[in-house]
Length: 271
Image 1 (cartoon, helix red, strand yellow):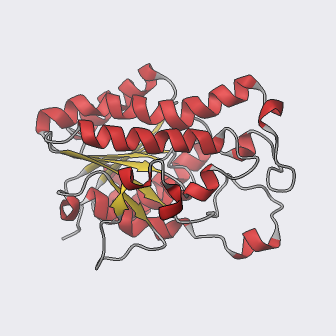
Image 2: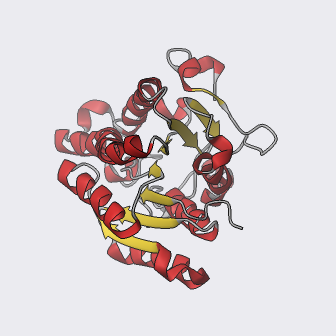
Image 3: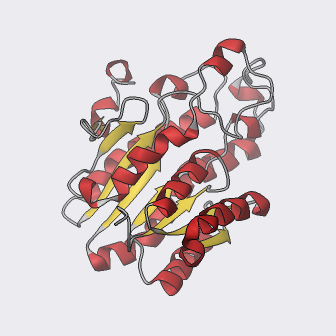
């Protein structure tokens, strides 16, 4: 029996990178998976086809949807319930990275005052407002069933403060604070909310073609996130909320990571 048999999961930003890795893992574990992306239909369909090819053609559904749009998020939730009857898991992975700001951000990091205000607003809308809107859209269904798991994809504290990483770093720092607050708000509802991060720079489509050698040599495979993502979706973590799991440090023997709140305002004590 697969660990997620009977579960229904929504994974945003599922066309590539971390979102694709999580979606594939959920499909392999028996979940019915709804995949979303705001653009790049070909990538989204490729993820769906990969899940279907493993014998899960009736358990995958792909939707183009912009997480920065409230009506679009509500439509994803409604279509998920209409197709699969419920929502057990939401993975807030969709994000716009520094490549959206400038194509060569490692070698030529922008200064914050040089960033176009519309680009700033788009990154914040996707990376911070998007998880709020998607979580808000699925919560009525989770509250009704008194169960559910929300997983916000985060990043290292050091990267949040890396020179030239505006507005990507601030958007993820905002999500960090939001995750701590939302987990506390959800206490006693049966719904848990946790953060998951790779633990370093990850080989995804967010990276530029040209990378410094020290960055390229240390890249993390997105597949490393799959095992803790399955754990957070599964009944094994049903008592785990308000935690921050780092994939490079995660193991089944010590699965629960660290409290999110412990890192707020004191990043020197956490990764």
